[in-house]
Image (cartoon, rainbow, N blue to C red):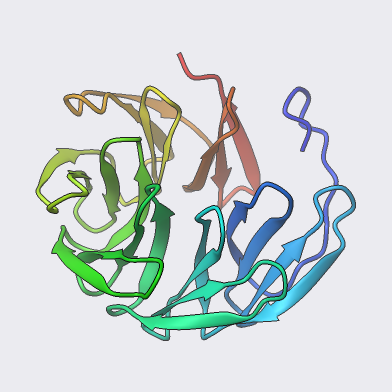
Length: 238
């Protein structure tokens, strides 16, 4: 999509595409209904599909490897972006969101009410308590942020020891992004997105399309995927 005017080109992928990430060269898509991830050329949409485990959902890049959460396998996969070879590591129940903080991989475990901090070299991990049904996760350069979808709260976590502060957000928070200044949260059941001050949790809510789910920052704009009305919203942070 052209961020200036919204013109777009559509490329085919596999069944039930969910998470998406960029590795500096290729776009990676987790296809939850196909048990595969796709590596796509952003210039023309050509792609290579690699096997992963059951119901891949989240995807992230750590500067070397692609990380995939496999929702129904209780495992996370570390994939070589050159050839799709992978190593699978155990995590907790229904891993969903995934993020990299420059040192560790962070995984939200939807049914375990915990977030896992994983060593990307060997898959060893520490699990920290969070609130009900953690889903989205992001790093703001200092803290880990977790959207607790059934708690209507987000957690700001110290990555060193898992201590946290919980802030109110809207109904059924899904995804989180950081724009360099503020935290942005999609509130699925409110048709709103929250812009939150990471220092104190104060927030401003903006209307968006129906049931906003995914969110990303492109360096200039916040982009929101609105699931129920098949639109994307562009917000200029202010």
